[in-house]
Amino acid sequence: MSRTAEYRWAVTAPGAALEHVAVPDRAPLGPTEVLLDVTHCGVCHSDVHFWEGFVDVGDRKVPVAALGIETPYTLGHEVVGRVVETGAQVTDCKPGDLRLVYPWIGCGTCEDCLRGDDNLCVASRAIGLRRAGGFADRVLVPDARYLFDIDGIDPSMAATYACAGLTVYSAIAKLMPLSPDAPLVLIGAGGLGQSALAILRAKGHRNTLVVEPREQGRADALAAGARLTFDPADPQVASLIAAQAGGPVKSVIDLVNSPQTATLALGLLQKGGRLVMVGLYGGAISLPLGTIPVRGISIIGNYTGSPAELGALLDLARSGLLPPIPVTHRPPQEVTAALTDLRDGRVRGRIVLTSQKD
Ligand SMILES: [Zn+2]
Ligand SMILES: [Zn+2]
Image (cartoon, rainbow, N blue to C red; front, top):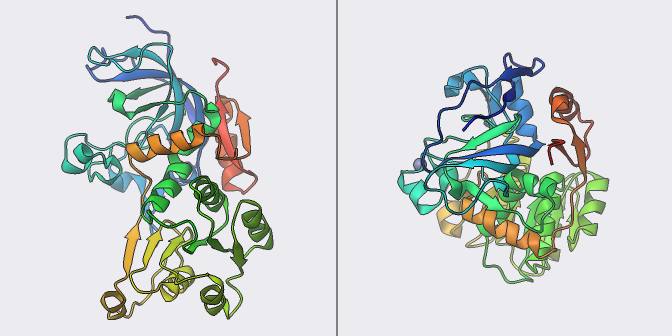
């Protein structure tokens, strides 16, 4: 099958303007592969780090070259596209279908991948870093099982669900089932916090307590469904939360994960409590080890989420219960400006590169 000329916006040097490079002629598709025309691609904070040439692991910055990623590479992991061509064994989508890409794909053959936890695979092939991503005309997905129907969902919103939305959905899922009035402490009311509050409200949870230093952030959290908010600068914050939680605190999600927030979170947890760490602020704390077994506490790390969780999040979105996040649409050729604006803090909500093709 002949195809039109195809281009990508590639990182050729750390932090430099992305280059519009031609993609070599593609080999015929493998049996499970799907080629999509990119219609929407969100620009994420982690794209800014990858563009600048490192991955932030919290306490240090790992150069992307140390991960075996060679320049040029193509970023963009929040991808919605229209199917152009499918491999011989693909039956669940056809040319013309609009699909969201699950980007956190693994090797596809290890125990984690076969169980459906691709995001935990040690041989990650994540789209938008290890495989070419959505800052491009087209994206090649190795298996149709990583594609999701987004019928009834705004494609720009759907794109953002692949990263931030999925991450907080998965963090919340690690604390479920939880009765609607059991206290859940959420640390951080920025973009992830807003998404978390929306998901918790959609799931019918009624007792979220938000810790957030910014006054505006606390006001936004109350508007988004938090029952109470707290300023971590208050020296009494831990005892105030404990007194007003309406029950023992056994569930905390830390979207910041700094030494201060982790210390607060661990201090709040009652017997059997679970702390889900999401944020990548980094740093280190010293932990009185005896308290972990004696109090039966679990500390759980959360990195993105599984394909099944993305499907469940899309079902929640289809129910109409997730309020929209503000989105700025930009044409793909403005990708470098979009990354720069995001880096410099000039963006409210999300940027989604939107192609005129759709
Ligand atoms: Zn992201
Ligand atoms: Zn794997």
